[in-house]
Image (cartoon, rainbow over all chains, first blue to last red; front, side, top):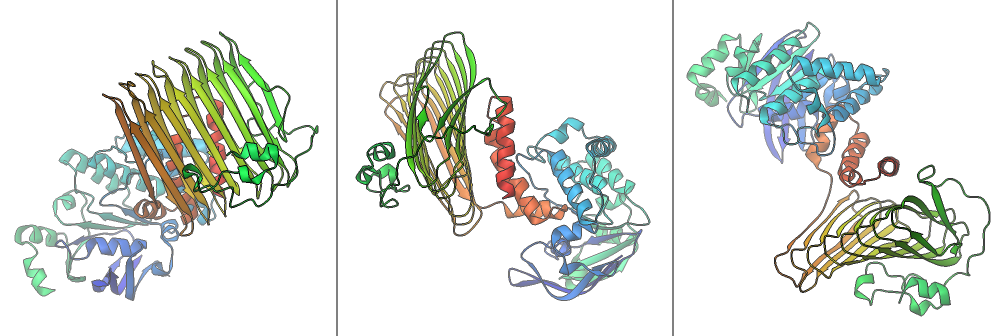
Length: 248
Length: 344
């Protein structure tokens, strides 16, 4: 599904990713762990096409299609979704309006019919119910005045409604208490399927108790320096990143 | 020096120009070397206009011809009036003056439109509005001037204590356009809201100028103007609130916020508070900037193409002003007008 080869990327003229290789097959959940400054967020922004993140070498493809040649919205329409570490507040735009605009834009881009109002509301009610979000909250401006946990839940709600194929979770556990973490993890786990791939980017092992990865990779100094099964996450939790920081 | 006087006499030396401090960004003297001939009558039937279907009566001023130069709303009456300044003749000039008296306790919703079905005209409209004790007026003005037009609409509003006056101006500019509001605020529990929206493209120009004179204690004024400028357009906001000596406990708040969407567009803003009284709550805020790049990326990551994302965020930015319109149907008319303008 996702194939990254020898990826190099600059931010502000400084090289952050220095030859990253990664393959995430459909149906699998891969965790990317690493110390601060390793390039974890840079990887998520490069994959989603944010301005200022310049790829200088290498490739990234989704089901064989070159992702790096596409605009951010074109990548989204092909199923790339990033759950932001710090979801943006969008004053004046009710959450429902925002998601409906996004969903219909994606459907248009794929040549599909737009969601009708009843169809969309049904989708929204189901997603809100599963994530224990009060439906009235969706009528408020997106994320404005929401707590950290509420913002993360709104990210998962958008994910559930947009039904992406490649899910990138950037530090989704930050700012969550244990109850919110469980709700968010349940929401993510409900989206696991043989057609989807997930990239879970996290500094701590805590989230991986709730979203069990198939593979764990250590990102340090802009490259994947170690890969293994779920036990690698436990080792990192015990021993820290020092060993890998030196390897990088 | 007023455009109305120049139009009446045909004398270009009477045009206001940049030598006058509050006309320096809307220079008419430097713009117009000569004035076109006077407009002629036009008896042709009008289309329904932007507020068509709202309200029960209409006052139409076509090419400056006013059939009824004054309007009185009697105590106890509650009326909604469409006031239409329509221009149908190109490359001509005309001006009109109208007086509206709203008696004590009466209510008026004034749906005012400036409709240019022509190009290159020079027009001025002067409105004298008196709002008596406890009376209530909401004025919603939609300006849709034709290409190459010069239009100055000036409203002088005199309030009595306990009166309420709310206004929302919506404009997409003209070659040169000024929408001016001068308001005598007596305090005494009178409340004023002065809002505006400008959405400018190409080389259009809009100037929203307001002057509020607080002359007594216990008056309230709130102001919120938002604008979006694109192309080589120019938005001007001049807001002055004067709180005279003795106008204690005045509460006056002014906000002006603009988005500049292109490098060659320009916004000139001059918010002024002159306070000579004690124990007042006065504040102003003024920001001019671009759309938030982070929010734009967030919306695009969710699948919105750039123009869709920009329109959504811009509409939301202006929506705060639209939401403050009291008259529900006019509010939806305004919302649709904004959406159409942003579609380009």
